Image (cartoon, rainbow, N blue to C red; front, side):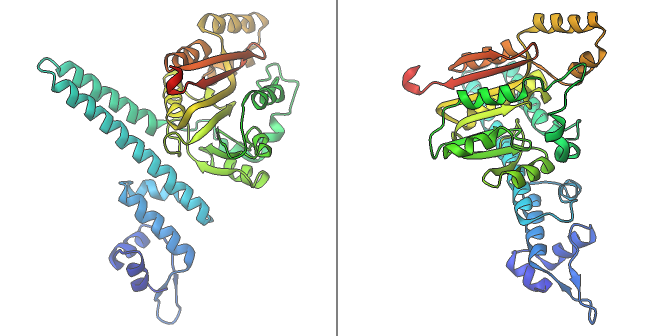
Length: 350
């Protein structure tokens, strides 16, 4: 397909197409005889992705980074588009909710300046948290060796102690019926989410690492994989019956964890379930006690591993869930590994 045909099909201009070619975002074939550009089907998919991302306001340089992998498949392009659009939608949702609150408070009379300033600051914080999270551990590079690494033993500090026991406990605890939708956040290579496919449930796996998703899809073709993360789940409101997560939440700071719980609550149906198996302490006093124990043992490896990540304060997560109408149960596997199971109340149970 030539450039005029492409412009007509995608409802854009030839000038725009040439601009993206000049910026290195597309590279159509050129016929030797006349240097006319010829666009294959994958060129159209890539170009439509670029146009969609520009439409929602992404700068060209950001799009270049998103599409830097030259061998992206159509599914990959669509996954990128969906993830970005969900982030944009959530940002607009936050803005609308903040404007609604501002309007309501302004309508009550004078002396609301401080309230309005506080709401604006809160919105700014939310936007920053959703946009600025990054993978400092480079999980893309770990994807192909991940399953082998979690089976290794003999370290002075083994974060994967009781790994299989924890996953089995999650599967045993969550109740799914055929046709139910289960969301696995931070699915990695699919070790947890795959255990629910046999129940007839639909499993959606979300991860920010494209390489992890690729390995998961190769191992478990029945799982639907979506690029995304805890703070911007690529799922519409009240769409899932259960949410599971293992060894992932500790990559968020304490404040980010609470925003992640808000996101889970947003996508979960009434009477839905959340089950999280992760590295966490019972509370701040327990954290100090465990670290002091490692210090007395001279186990700097353990202390370094704990300080490199963000092991949760379990009491804060429980407090948030209970305040938002969840019934909560817990199980402790060892000094750093716990499970939280929470069931969301239906309206008539409140």
